[in-house]
Image (cartoon, rainbow, N blue to C red; front, side):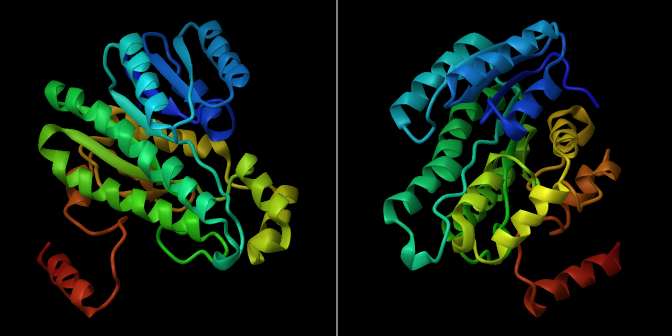
Length: 287
């Protein structure tokens, strides 16, 4: 399960999961374009990758600013020549708290981080992937994408939108051998945990859960990196349009099972009612 000789574009690469992903995916022969807002930390990650014998270019950008992002995309494509793997990892939690207490501008801002920025990046790399007949796109989902998340309405709604975009584009571009999947990382002790702790009681029950995670630890970051590495590599085959929970789903057993899983609604966002379940039961009986 390797991603050797791949050109990879990764957002949110300066810290947390993004930093770990950058160091995990760095291999001799691979080239990485790393995007984030924090220049100093981004340059440090790039330097570490170069010391490992790989290649990386740091690109400081705020993906919520369309013109700035377009320039950053041009810089990445110029440095890489083309993109084999796009990983939309950048994310924030705020605004946290009851919906009526949220600042409407902050509520809209999170969509620029989680949906509009990733969509702009996807739109930029898809033509090249389609022309070459291959590509992997990995979007980061999160809590609330598949179920309600009180006091995190902006986060949950924007992530649900990103997952539906993932599923829709996966079907549109499957004929071109482009696989597009979403990763639910689980509860990870990163800067986003700090946002919940800083919000205090405004985060509701999640504040108390965050306190426990801060003491006891959350999902191991390396587990998430291993899942992303699987999805970015040829090992994942034709698997596409899936929402995969890193700590819960049996993705390590999915090598060469892409076509089989693609034919089912498993690991996707779907209604659960007789209208959707009965045809599934019949399909399983026919297997």
